[in-house]
Image (cartoon, rainbow, N blue to C red):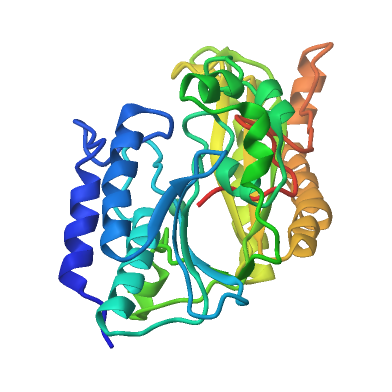
Length: 355
Ligand SMILES: [Zn+2]
């Protein structure tokens, strides 16, 4: 039995037109007219496949087809159709439309399942509308209530609950979106890979073994800003020297610890940030991820501290600390700080991000 690839492709392309961003890609946040238009289109495809669509109290769109054995729990296959800004057309949408395609293919081949089939489409999975990723799936799992919606502000500082009311939902009824484990046999999700591993190794399919945990660390190096022309090299206390030495060190930790651990230095703020000024302060950020939080913690604590020390000593060896101390009274030297960092959506320690 094969799914109809042409039909699936046509559905993916039709959905990508809703919220098509003039600058390229698709921008379709939940609780917007585009999202509701997409929900209508998907609901139609659900009906074609024999599913009955409904919106739950959280705003999740859920299609369901009863099975032949009423005593069976449902098998759910779903994903999301909200997007990040200028998203690709497959993220989430392939999971939703692929699931509908499976149900339709089963029906067209006369396969009657004993189990009810459900296709849940989780609202605000990406967190781009409210800054509250996984909102719909959290409601599905019974993790949030009306107070959460009132307390949590969206990106404009407005309580999420206000938007729920505006769209005709009762925030307090979000608890009704909770699904009991007694109702569900299993949940499957197909998702586009967000990197190029499958393509690189020529694989058709990968099975997710887990979701990476991660921490963000911040290191601050304080030296002294000086004129780039007038300050000789031996009188500088240049914060960029030890900071930049940490980058290859971070790569070395990741390579030494091995896959799937990854470390990224994606943000480095240099002050004052002028071409003709010796950097007086560097703030840098490390993103450390692994399937095992123990390994993340190991990289974070033991190894990362080692790297921080190494970088500090490298700064000392290169003479920046010592010379500056000798020539200028009261300089602060290189200061290292380390700890969890607040991301745009609050603390990120031991958390996972949306996909
Ligand atoms: Zn996704």
